[in-house]
Length: 103
Image 1 (spheres, one colour):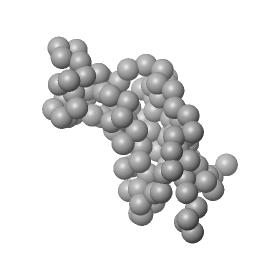
Image 2 (spheres, rainbow, N blue to C red):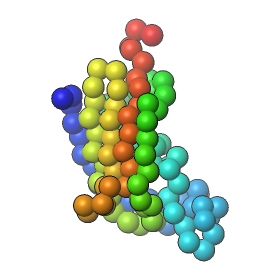
Image 3 (tube, rainbow, N blue to C red):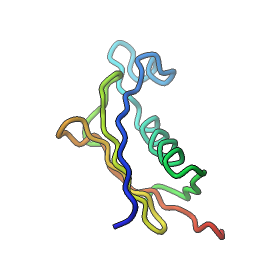
């Protein structure tokens, strides 16, 4: 088990990605969630990550604007695992592959 971190977040209703995803019934796009994972990880670690790809990701349920959710991160040697949940409902989970710092 690696280092772990947890944060609470919500995506504001005026986020620029929401009007096109979907008009009249906005849902937070998966790419916004993935970007949030990386930005939160970099803030936690205090330095940029070198993500080389997404090993896997699964979106289980949609997240709506303004809904509070929990982000759980676990940093391993060459990967960053994440889980996003709202209450007991799993929203998304996955793993980013990380480059070695010497690469």
